[in-house]
Length: 264
Image (cartoon, rainbow, N blue to C red; front, side, top):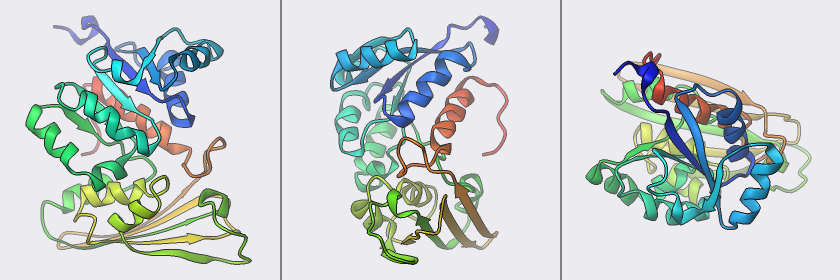
């Protein structure tokens, strides 16, 4: 069938916080016609309905556990502690699930195993990190080390008022995600694309001089050496998150329906 005449992929968003709201706005106003926002879900469907109405978006408001089976694609924009319950309802359905809570997948790899076993397509957008395509390519050979140093303004870490830069964490990615579940999705994404949570090294710094979230990634392998510095604007609504994260979700959704793909 000509792609211009295929039915639109229906999208359901779990969680209308900062990221979910931006994705919903994009789907309603700017997304390809082959994508359609069908539903949004949260713990309180009435609050979700009111939120959709305030945004001028025509979509069904529903409970989180009702999303499974309603939509072709489910986008998880919930708080990290709510992701497992959502995955439990939809991971065996054989559809497509996209989550911004990558740390949950690193800490609980059974979700990845279940998706592979049942044929559910489990997608992780690149989020706030660059170089994921190159890291995946390097993983076809031998990766010797992956390191990330994340520096954020204190408000992005709920850190105290130190006068200068202060290291608040040093360890591996699995430990970082456990300690900072709302801040370390970037480390989780690098781990899953590369050499795992135990071998991915992480430092987290609080720096009152910064206005942006800064990520410095170092990757050494038998095929490449990468040094990447990323400076992301914090989200105005949630300084723990980078503004580009919602854009990454939108780009990943667009990639589901665009027959042309650039990058791995």
